[in-house]
Image (cartoon, rainbow, N blue to C red):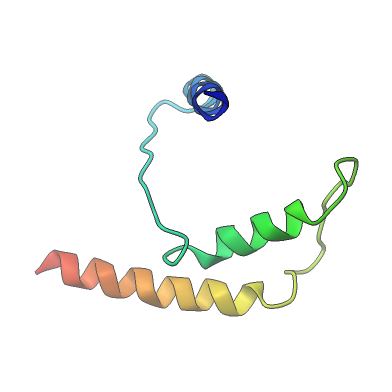
Length: 79
């Protein structure tokens, strides 16, 4: 499967550059920032070099929202 090969390559690259790596599943609903940035990249032609001097429109609000959700989950998991 093509996806399996991509995952294998990512794991190999991460092992080259990091001493410890933990990968965890996070649904799109839990990480809207990554989903939104990936969606922006998917809309660009393949030869496009993406570089932002400022945060893209709407992303800052998503970071705040995701952060509040994540911090709430951390508090719940401590009990």
